[in-house]
Figure 1 (cartoon, rainbow, N blue to C red):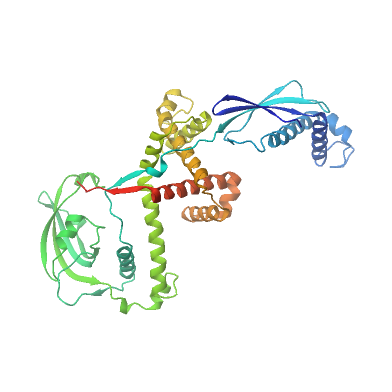
Figure 2: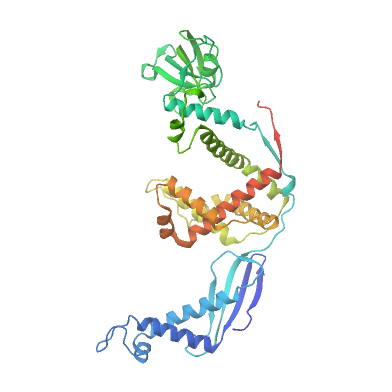
Length: 426
């Protein structure tokens, strides 16, 4: 095959002109005949024993179709080797002339590409947050205390002190709103963690209470509360503190740790620290992702392949339809519908491509083990076996997860490079 000519249509599109020599075409026909011959059946001949001449005669269309696909696939794969750009679409093939056995033929293959772009300014990001860096030791202690509470391994505090932050408490409470008691919301001897996981006003009101003490605590529900009838309402909690529950590590034995797959208590703590650290890093990346991409795109202008934008719109419409009732489905071919997603899709594609360019500039890569671990995690969370996921979706799912892992790795890298400013909460 001669070296293909490559025409630049625009910054994100290239057209290959490919010539396939006559001997390659002849070889493609021979392979096609051999493949069809293995399953061909003609009266008077056993399956797989039909002479090649009869295969060519009686299965001419199938032979030509298979030979054409082989000739194009092989020549296209060879033509794109060594190009200095990333092809991001399937080729649009346009054949010049007839495709015939033993004759040279030419065709063009038009593709969208992701041209190399050097991203600037990504090492000078300034990320703002109202969240302070979490104290990992406090998080581990809280998690261990929760495990002990779930396993009924907490002990009653006996010094007579009042409840304090990070304690667990057992309380009875009744709730009244607008003077009316909500009996269905009352609770007896319920365990509450005073670690920010419950209603803040309720926790703050319990802090300082002693065992046996009762107290009325007013709690105003925010607009984000799940029960619409409580939005913006102030409820009166009539709370009785039954006991203060604390973690006494001395009463925890190795068999407690072994319930969670650890050899002993120290190993359990180490496992929890690793898990929580990883969770904190993922949360930090999620927290800063939009800021990172916004700042990068503000500093860098570049074109993106239209096919990637259109594909992103397709997926967004399909996702929206998966949550809609039949009869209210969006028409993915309606330009008005597509235009509603276009600006968002363009930003999404630009963001992912920019992160990919940064990965190249920083030498960040993803190995097969990392991809395999991500697929395994996803499969377990979805109640599937990893091998079933791979069998159902094949190579495509591997590449999608590879891209996801790379994006997460780049974002984590950028968070590490950025200046992080903690803003005071209003």
